[in-house]
Length: 196
Length: 253
Image (cartoon, rainbow over all chains, first blue to last red; front, side, top):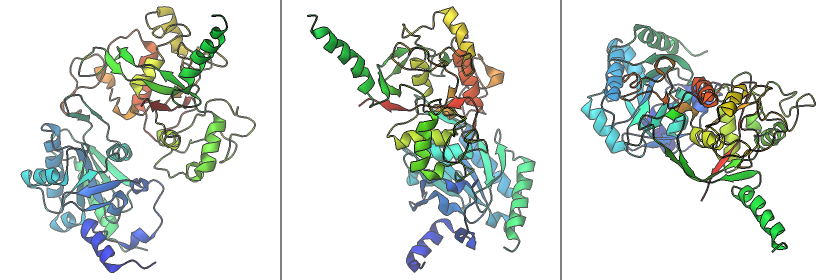
């Protein structure tokens, strides 16, 4: 099927799908089986499954969280720092909001700037009813409280290019989990090998 | 006077049943002190009026669903949405077969499948609080929880000896089987962030739960609720169990 070039380019600009894997059937256990919409910090609207194509480290947070969520971001940055520059360029960090009503692209962009995260990081605002579904497949447990804060588990999740979960790291400080860093390295070396 | 009685009786019988559509029973809202202590307070919580299915979703009901939405057949469902045990007790991918009672509650269903079933009915799964509220009733009282003898019987929930196993009478709302042979999924099971090491503690692990505490129990006499909580909070949404089914709910307009 032919698609308009401009449409393809738009997709590339948004989520940079890297490999021709997108043409192949999605594995049954892929997170991208989920039907959900997301908008990034630059206001680009897309589909959750558009993230397919390269390994990613994902986490869920919300911008109005001042204790744990900054630690998740710092932990993610620390994971990246332990990688070589070449490795760093090939794993994308994806931070997904648990509070899509308040975490607009602008709010997400402000948070990204405040924490001085590398420009390749994606901050995503899920569709209105999609935060719950995404949290569910990532096994992030959360509960909105009456005061507007959100109780949630804090975790980094490594997924391969097809959206299969390879490793998880519970975040309790800004110090990265060595086993998780090793898993990221392994995933990158696997995805670097030629596709058969 | 006497002539009007049958009509009144009929109205009483029909009105609650029609509240959420056929097969649903209206449950009036109210103030309810959950056995679960949420961080905000241990005080009573407000439950809005809702409608709950009169009976749990049966094997026959679920077979009709997978016929209409074959992506939920056990041989087609993506592994992301259902574990390997999904509908494993059925004879085939399309139905329970003769060995499984068609009108028995369907079990071995993942949360995703239960959620999809209810959505297809323009309904939703009940919340933990709604379920607890409706299940606080025995056959005569809407809140029977002060009855220690009744509470003790709830320890048999989700076993063959359960209070509502088989053809037991409905509870005071007219709902069957809430204390039956199977546990039931709830919509917000993933928000039940209990912590087995911190039950009853005044403050939980602030880092693990992002500046807040895990849930705790208000009243440890409520064995049935505690068992349900412990079970549901330990589950993953793909999990299936031989004694875990579901029923749907609808919010009242």
